[in-house]
View 1 (tube, rainbow, N blue to C red):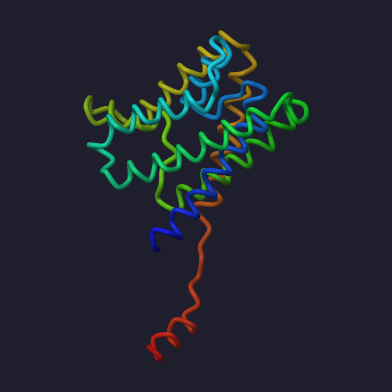
View 2: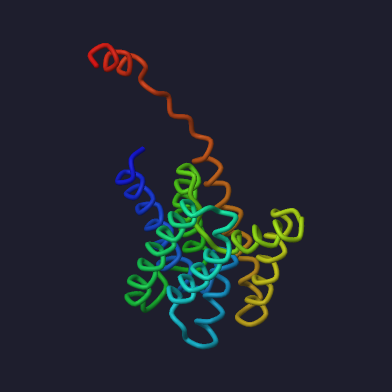
Length: 205
């Protein structure tokens, strides 16, 4: 896949993520993950725009993690983070109130978020976030990245719940559950190539 097509597909996936967060999740202060939890906290306590926190946090973590991610993957991840942050910044300014009730918005937002994340994973890209920090800690301390990520995200979600509303913890867990299930569905979809077309093209090449 050439660079232009890859950048287009990743841009679409990152845009989908940004729409899910800014339209359905953030108006209810529901974080989609660890980095989003920091964004929710900064916005709730200091009125810092979500996009600034997301981009700044991810940029800092990516610079630190470039040694383990590799320059190519780090740049693609930064591209996705930048697109997502730009969409969040643009849409959040237009959102004066939640679209609907929290349950409906949570469900729709989680599904859409999972679709965006699934496309990113299928493309071999990362959405950034606390998985970068978990990778650094796991590499330097020899710990399990999954457990490390769980404790990081869990601690941030707990803090968000204490500061904002304890229901946030429950909503965030539901968001993670639905989003990751959608991710798995998209990630496991098999695309069968058209061998007849390939052979025909090879014959005439």
